[in-house]
Length: 565
Image (cartoon, rainbow, N blue to C red; front, side):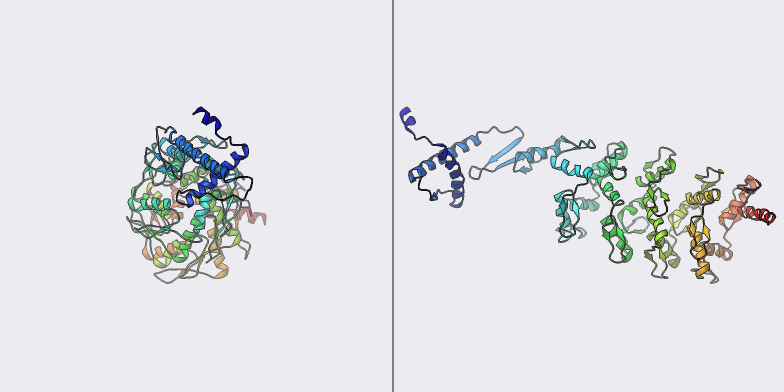
């Protein structure tokens, strides 16, 4: 037996190479012939058929040995391996949920869903991530790299998966909701959407108990509690809680890629374009079940519903004022900090909200993209068009529960309710006068600064308020768009028409809490109250004399002008 072993032929290096090559070829032949061996003839005269037979034997022996070795590999305690001897595939099964994987790496990565382990850390912001691929994609937020380009629209993406989803815009939405018929590009998006119908919100914040439909929304929400803002704009240094918010912000410095084909207006987000297009279609698909009010998209409906519930979950730490939305709180906090991060490149004026900057820029461009189909009047904001349309319909959906008065705008109702509460939250630091609206304070401050930023291009006259300029311009155009329903008299402004109509109705909605006297105009009540307070806020810079009303000051100033003449 020992002698037989010694006499076995030795396989040289060249033979070993051919043996390995043959292993691959024999393996292919076996697959083609249903597991039967059919050797391929070699066009090499230096190797005889005997050697081929010998290599065939070695191949079979080695193959059996390899199979034996693989079958003897010890199994991990938490992994079930099913081994197919023929095609040598391994299946790795998760013992927690039963999901199957083709390779051990995929299983290990998957198990982090159950363990919560996040071993990969971003050196830029410290965020921990489950997978190396996800870390690579995340790091592109910091670098701005977008290596995947869509050939359909030239848009670029950080991840190949996002590119795949985008490409479906140019083709199909294969995942359809059986309940409402809405279609989606991704199965995951469909699953999340179905929670709208079921009301399921499986992700709960342990800090405040608020629940969410998506884990990503919970993660973003938790940053309100931690104060974490991991996404930084490399252009201006501003930080954000969500990567999406950073992406949208970065377009301030670059582009608005989504264009409305109907009016040419461009947007930073595709979602904003979708909502805007509803203005043209007059579509308002989201309805409040409490009062029937309709909205163009779900976010304002969610905020509106808090009017009925009284929910104001976001609290200002400085003054205690509460808000329905986190965004409203963020903007409000700028009142305390004085921060105005958005600057007009045309005139240098700064704003605490980007929306206010966008609207302001239309002063320079003259753009009024929203047109009333009833009278042809154009507006800078869609909300102004909506409010204006109520002039034609007579609709006043906002009612004061205290006195029954109705309003066209929710903001007007909020301001009106301050009359009942006696609340004037906005104070002038120059003279101490208080106001119900921040807009009135801003206009009042121009009395002290002398600023009149709005100029009539026709005659050069300047105004402290844009609305006053708009009304003034009707002197040149002769336009009187507001008509009294009682006598047919027309007016340049809606306010003048409203005040006039009180002549017919006898309405005097502004009552002095001191003596009970009522007035048809708020300004008259304010002037009257100075009789009780003795307040004289209007001071002559020439002689120091003070007056209760600005008209008395102007009348007085003519004395000085007469003396100069």
